[in-house]
Image (cartoon, rainbow, N blue to C red; front, side, top):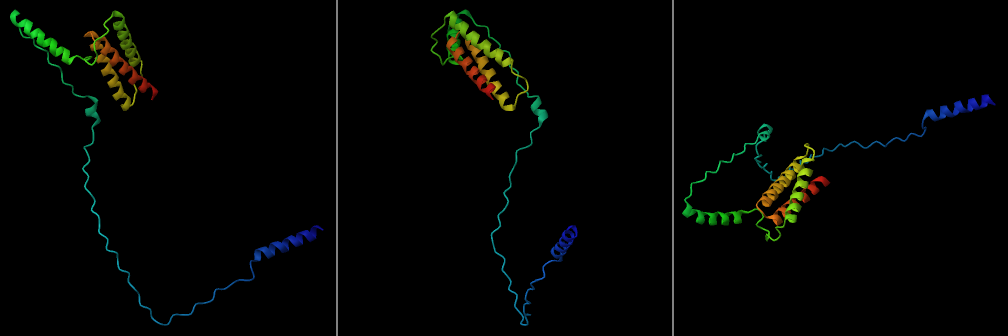
Length: 184
């Protein structure tokens, strides 16, 4: 029985490997005896576009950005004022200070010690949170940190000038910006 299986297996392998016996041959095409003209295809005449010249800004230099030049404030020289002109100049300076006050947007309503303490606490909490941030921040966060510090400084100046409501508003703005920055 084993011999018959082995012989049958060898015969099957031989038939499978021998290939197809019905090979199809393609009919031969007749030879072309008449000459044929070659047709030239004309090239399309499309208008060529000119490459626009783009002037790129100069490459920024990192060394120059590392040490920005800051203008130093010049000390204010106060003139000697006579007692008769003192009253007139005091009125002018008060008007200028009121116009240039940081918290001039507020109505100047509440000046109680409790409101002043709340504003001071709010400024102190923003300062503490700002100092607690890690020094390695992205450029977007550095710009936002600068805005927070600016609002905080303005709030402190408003509080020292007596504008409690303006100080609260500016400190709240700094706090909200700091909240947004910490969410990112």
